[in-house]
Image: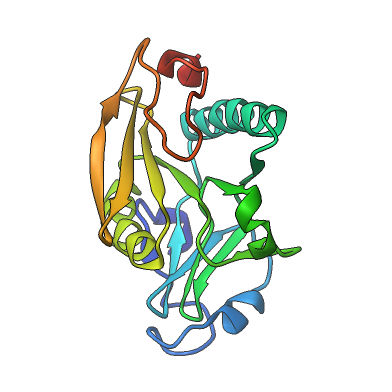
Length: 198
């Protein structure tokens, strides 16, 4: 069994050939071979995430399907799912599980990445990624100016909605069951939370 086979959490990918940790840039990242692993850069540090679970993938598919249908039908913008890069800075590159870019910001969408802050990012957290999602990602997303961030918990069947206010995220609460989301980016999304976990 290799080191990679045993990774239970998001971890710095120190074994990957390339620059020293802390010096990774998007250009270095773009040269990585497509080896089937999910990499992201935070503050110049290359991280690797463990493979997602079935529950994670099911939630991503359901949420993205509802978002895409609503955003497309309302003509609001576009929805993408991982793996699709978001270049927040030269040393911060992420692959959010789901992202939304509204029409006013479509110039940020390039062929293989979004350059700058999407309007909404969604991360489906698991025990192995929740700390990373709530620390490194949340801090970097706020610094980059992403207006809204959803953190999904498949075990609790909840979605927490975070909105950016004065450079920091404020939680509007964690929602479940028959509740609808108080999203500012996709207002009036006609979906009950339980539908995301059906």
